[in-house]
Image: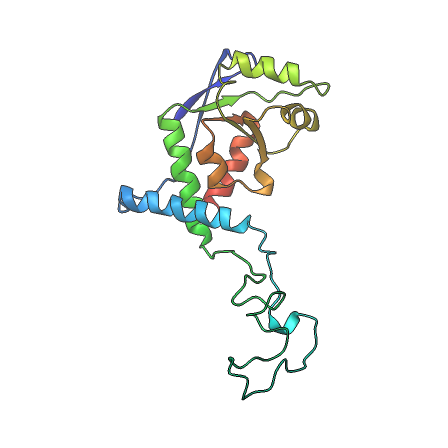
Length: 215
């Protein structure tokens, strides 16, 4: 697959790059591919959950262990101590406890999901490869001008780079629809699927190919 390389002004440089991705074999049908993306995004979102919710059970409540009333003869139901969950201020029955929501998924499936999403972005012409550029200072206005020249400012944008420039990173934080990720720290299907356009720096292509094709 051949894609033209653009400069930061959105103009064609006359150079092209060939993406040598080893995409999914044809023996996997479309429904299965979509299900793999669903599983990977579900895994990613589950891993973001903090899981720190907790309520106190009967054994964790501070209070007297003294029996409230005698066992028989009162005509009422049997009652234990004040920590009984049936009383106000007592323990919580079957309340939430601390837990991890992490889901296990094979690394191969994770890479397949990313490859499928990248493949669909390429087919729909939602990927722009640009020459490496840097900002001499932190300036949201200058970054805005670059994105305007690429005609993608109004959409959700994901910038993929092998090394994040601090000036570009801090300049992008004022835009709700722009996110920058570092290939070396890992990319995920959720960010790719959520973005309408992908911007990939030319010098990051090899890192991306090596990550996806590495066994």
